Picture 1 (cartoon, one colour):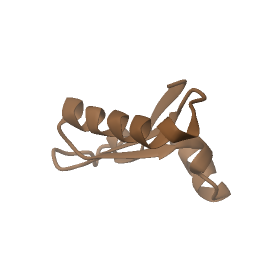
Picture 2 (cartoon, rainbow, N blue to C red; picture 1 turned 45 degrees about the vertical axis):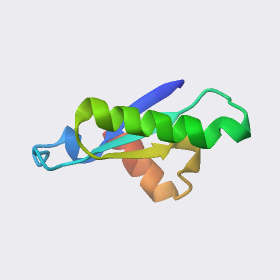
Picture 3 (cartoon, one colour; picture 1 turned 180 degrees about the vertical axis):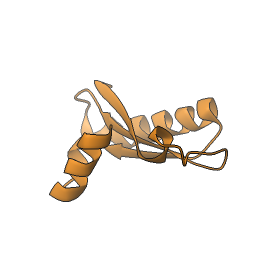
Picture 4 (cartoon, rainbow, N blue to C red; picture 1 turned 60 degrees about the vertical axis):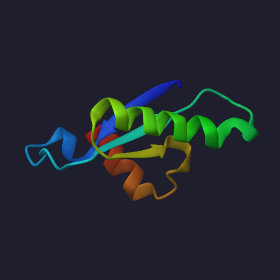
Amino acid sequence: MKKLYVFGSVLTDTFNKDSGVDLIVAFEDIPVENYADNYFDFKFSLQDIFKRPIDLLEKQAIKNPYFRQSVNQKR
């Protein structure tokens, strides 16, 4: 993993015991055949640590420019 950013309700007063955690990850370059295992192992490890749902987005997968701008302003 190169970078990890948090965004969404976890950064606001609306975050509560039932909220999930929204994260954006930028992974190091890894072979394509290892990507899914790496992604899901990381996501499930975070869920075990935080004891709540994790919404994990890969930074390069965010194609919508408006969503990308919104996330970049609030991370």
